[in-house]
Length: 401
Image (cartoon, rainbow, N blue to C red):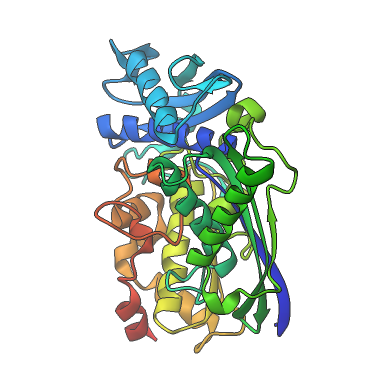
């Protein structure tokens, strides 16, 4: 491992056009799962100037069966989409929750996919697709996330809270952040650069109002990033292009699934390539990414490693994973193969089959819209939400090793 280096991660706000799309897609997932816990959903969203389009494949008892919509179902979908955009805060001429044009192009799930995924006879439910998924944890922060991403998220979360509460009424929904930290070994020791670009009200790109906005952003950074990491040598780039009045879907088209590194580990870990939002938990792109994060976090929380990456792989229609791989990057207190064996021996995980994962983590519930902004990982598990962030396997892993 390198002993002295710079590393950077970025985040985007809930008002970023791609994140608007993610939140709409997951609002649809939650809507269908609230009607039918066994619903099948693959919902993609396109956002652009005064337009939202849904496309994808679904199956949901009481909502969409045999290629027919239940009475009132399409109206409820449109209402859910508009309420999501309203909650984010878009009431602008180029994108307004009440007046954008809406298209619903969702249709029936392919029968050929269904026959491979559905359980039947002696056949267990198969994976919804082939693919590789990665989970990661590191002891940079209390939530066992890379510090660069953790602080990037927190900057934008704080700004969004201030926008919603009118503490910072000059902020508009679209924003991006980026944090660069200097590491010594695996420990962050200094913040060398901060980048924040935020959509703003008219006039906040010059004079006293621009100075007010920049002072506000520096104040947020000071609240979020520990004082011992900041110094006079920290470089700030705040709205470096100048004016940022036109933003969100009016400024750039948004699509579901284009922020997979923001959603996961900020580039600190490999990524299998599959997005999460808009997918029900039979899709292992989502559920297996959650279980690998859960396992990696428990490995680090158990003190078995300072960093841990876990990969898992599936074939479409096949229940059992094809492989399980653990890498503690030379920080493990026991061999990586021993950790692999310990994970395989935990019966509660159900053999890491799609059904086993969903059962153990309780994923067949409408819990997904909160995941669609500010990261799927490093969040606080509360009630049914973010169960993959629990560390309830620590004692079992210690006992096995």
